Length: 184
Image (cartoon, rainbow, N blue to C red; front, top):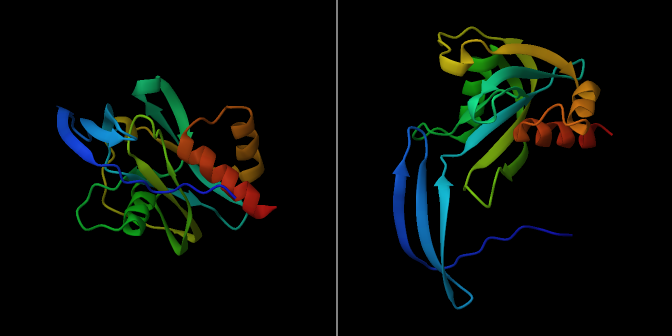
């Protein structure tokens, strides 16, 4: 069975070539099989996403504008792991409350993946949250989050949307496929 493996090649130089608001672009030179190679990539903080599944088998999804692709995408509650000392699970709990107004009694790691391994080092851990209930928090949504719309989507409907390329957010696609495989 195929399994991704860690690799440790000697980095001989590293330079931040762009500092952004959320992440940076770095240039690294490393030794690879007798060659010196240089690669530029986005150094990302990482992120979490939450597949909140209710008793009816529906997934909570949000519609949010994403400027780089100029689309409103259907996504899962998600966010960056950029708070010092916060575990991925605590970040997932925070994001579920902030973006969906929900809390969960049961949590488990569903899937972890790299979003674009040829261009950034971002890793997203998706959590499955069940035993859901409403929670009120004091959080003000700004920017693209200010007009987010949330709705419950039947898992079968979400799977068809993935198969038809109507849902293109990678965390949502990975979670929906993982959940569909689990349910069968």
